[in-house]
Structures are given as C-alpha cells and as structure tokens.
Image (cartoon, rainbow, N blue to C red; front, side):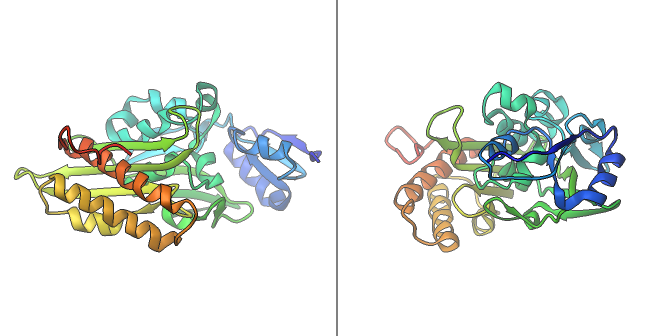
Length: 297
C-alpha cells in the first residue's frame, strides 16, 4: 500500500538541515528519486514527509579544494560525465557514471543518492573508493567527514543515522600519468544492473614498475571492497601476463573468503577473474595474445 506523505522543498541547505533536525524520524530525503520512488510505489518505504533537496545549489559543487576533488552530493551522473574537471582528475568516476542506467536516469540520479542507497551493485562506489573518497555528513548543523568505506556496511545498509545528510565527497585526484579503468558485467551492455563491477588505477614509474595500484570490486561481496591483497602484491612489479592472471586468482579467492561459497560462486568466480584480467590488460597495456582467452569474462 502506498503511503500518504507531505512534500517539502527547502529553499536552502540550512533549511533542509533544520527540517531534518526536527523531523528526522518521519522524513525520507529525495535527491533524484531513482531508487526511492519505485520503493515507495511498492510500499517498501513509508514516511510522513518527503524532503526534496534536488534543487539545492549548495549540493551541486564541483571543483578542486586543498588538493582534493570536491563533488557535491546533489551532482547528477550527467553533470559528472560532462564536467571537464572530473574527466581530468577522476576519469574513473566519469567512466562509472556513463554506465549508470539510461540517459533519463543519469539526468536525475545523484552521487549522494547512489551512496545512500548502498546497493552492492552501485556503479559509483568502487570508483569513489579507488579515489580514497571521504564523505561529508551534516547532522543538526554538525559537520563530520568519514571514509566512504565506513559508510557502506552491507547491502542497502549504511552507518548513516536519522537526520544525517550527505553533502559532499572529497576525492584524491588521479590525473595523468595515472591510468584508470572501469569495467562491469551485466545481463546487457546498457540499462542493466552490474553483476560484477571493478574500478582500478595505476601509476607506473620511470623504470616500468608499478609504484601505486588501487582496485575496488563491487557486486561480488555484500559491499564493494578494496582488493588490498592484490594491491600489495602488484606494487613494485613490472606488469606482465603472469602477474595479471595471479592477481585475478588472488582477488577471486578473497571474494570467496569474504562472501563464502554461494549458488552464484560457480558463475561469479570465473567471470570475476575474466573481468579482472580484461581490466588489467587495458590498464597495464599488456597484450595477452590471440590464444589467451582469459581477457574475456
């Protein structure tokens, strides 16, 4: 059964914060509505108030601040794809944004909404985690900043409390000479939820060795995770076929340790290994050769 609610549109961020301070337990926040509205139609969410923050300019900032890339929680995926600063400083974020839904969804869906929904298949979260993203949260006028990894606790479950409002994301820029990649597997190439997704970044030193490597995998475990064992293994190595395959196998082993053996493991393990190999082939500019089929998921 659909709930009856009152629609509230604050004129400013301060007004939104004040509203939440007084009505947090009865209010849901509307940013783009791409996840919220279907859930409300199904009767999965009920509330007394819907607080529409979609038109607040304070949540739409994009820029560099103290060597960090700042992206407002109300920035849409279309904004991300079209922004030159993001494409230069965080190309992985732009690549992930291009994979989200349809053009209509990208026009209204927001970065803050995607994180707040905490879907394990969210396209933006692995890319954000590769940039060591931190999240600015406001509650009753108090501003706090926390690592994104501390926000996502599990499928559709976060550490956010009633009254918390995500306002900004702070990212470590990864411009050239960093190389980045974002890849995903879905039932279709477009308009499909990710079955497995992956974001990665690498910096190669003057000797051809890996000096910095970051990889985050989503949809394979209850929440996206940085593949720290793979990152440690690859730093200092020179990219080649052998270490790419070894990295993929290590990552799939970590996946099973984190999520256990499930009915989907038989599919996801080889698919994940193939996706990782394909992604690292692209990232490291390593040609696996015509006879090597591991690059295909």
